[in-house]
Image (cartoon, rainbow, N blue to C red; front, top):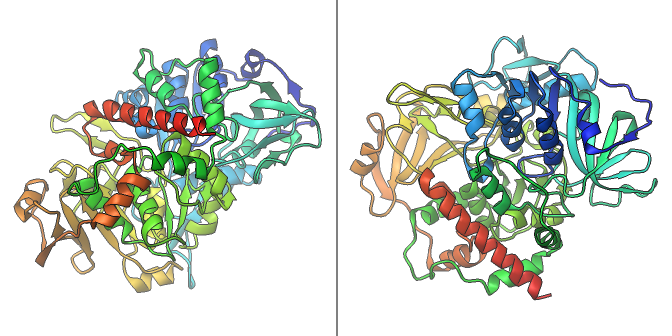
Amino acid sequence: MGMSSGAVTFVGLDDLVSRVSDGDRVGVGGALLTRLPLAALHTLAARGPRDLTYVSWGGGIPLEILIGANAVKKVVFCFSSLDVFGLAPLFRAALENDLIEYEEWPAFAFTSALEAAKQNLPAMPFRLPGGSDLVDGRLRVLPASGTRVPSEIALAPRIDLDVYLMHAQRADELGNVEFTGARGMDALAPFAAQRVLVTVEEVVPAGSLGQLKQSFVLPRHFVDQVAVVPHGAYPTSCLPYYIADFGAIATSIEQSPPLAMTAPATVTATRIDDAASLSHREVREAVRHFKTAPSSAAPPSVDEVMVWWLAQRLDDSSVASAGAVSPLAVTAYLLAKAIHAPNLLIMMTSGGLVDIASRPMLLGLGESLDTQSAAVLCGGEDTYRWYYQQGRVSCEVVTVAQLDRRGRTNNIEVVSPRGRRVRLPGQGGMADVADLHRDFVLYQTRQSPLSFVESVDRVSASRSLHLSDEREQAGLVPGETALITNLGVFDFDLLSREFVLVSTHPGVTVGDVQDATGFELTTARHVRVTETPPPDVLRVLREEVDPLGIRRLEFVAAQDRHRVLEECIAAERALIERALSAR
């Protein structure tokens, strides 16, 4: 860990990134599309660094920028995608072609490794994810005994960083740094770094930090240099200053080379700045006059059947966590909260926004409204330890690229029918939470013999504790494993330890499901027809919960995804303009 005198230097952006040397272990702050230090990363990439080790829970846009600059020798990570924009092409190509080294970690192990460095310890214990093959020689397994403990724990060796790059809302004149909203690992990783380099929106007088909602102040003794870069996270968000510009992100991803982003034009900056100040009331009023969804008289589509089934699993006592890239799951949470479970606790943005209020399904505006309403703003490692480790989360509904009859999932890598390796985003935190959540609820939006298979190519996550007594012995709440696809619903039989088809969606036969399955199906004695949402629920879903139809993104083929995303982005922009014009 770095030892600073507390004398922080304020520098320009070029000087800031000059502190990154070839061969450094570089951590990157922010979370998903929130507060990513993109101005610093582009400036760093332009310098042409070499042999960096990229260390972060998520890869995404920052990792794509550095891989595109041929700057990365190795990546230490849990997950990498471009969120709703799809898979990360440069990351995939680098791993599929063995162009860079990589270490893939379970999320709890990763945060424990950072925590060990923070506390200047050689290692830190964590609960071993029993149903994943990610565990390897890095993690020393220790026996555990007694009641309310897992059968095994492991020690994660410390991860030290040479440099941590982050973007924050404010710094004061002394160099103390303040940030708010979903923190990602920004309240943990800086303490594991030798040098912390920060870009900020503005500098304020000493003594005036702490005024942003539930902010975290990183003391100046852990900060080396600060550069003032307004819109330094653009086109990702930095609330309450500006929302993410999904249109600019989409455009930059389509460019060649990808992710060549520039500062926002004045008109764009004004729009995203003003949008960040929109309230729940203003957005709801704009939605009320904004009709894009089909009439509630239209029959339910398969995505609406799936949303309704998922929503009915939740009640007022539930705690639901939203993973990355899960529009269908988030839509189901918001529908449940709007229809029958007003006290449902929802955690958003990698667990950093806890207990959000009911609101429409949105893109950039969604994070802004959640940040305004959340009861708690924190880091991902906080909710891991408060909620997940204690078994307090009811479910985190997750989608999987490949799934087998025994409930083993694979979001790591598959082999195509022609024998080609196809790299996937990674398991994120699924390896850990498969056991920790009360229910392990999975979904597939395009079931096929290639996605629902006899045995997965890799086991990224699966449930290892099924029976009530073994879960209680581990201090966890008894629950169940369940699956819904675009064709039907499956329960998990505890005797055979395999999925059993219990219902088919309207118009789907058992034969249709069998044709889309890579093994011989087991069916219930009486296969039902999945319940469809009634007209009053459809109206709320279409007009109030997801008026832009964002849930559709998970149902279209890759070649159509860009078109649907463009429609959603354009609709949200029109919604923002309506809300701002009504002021």
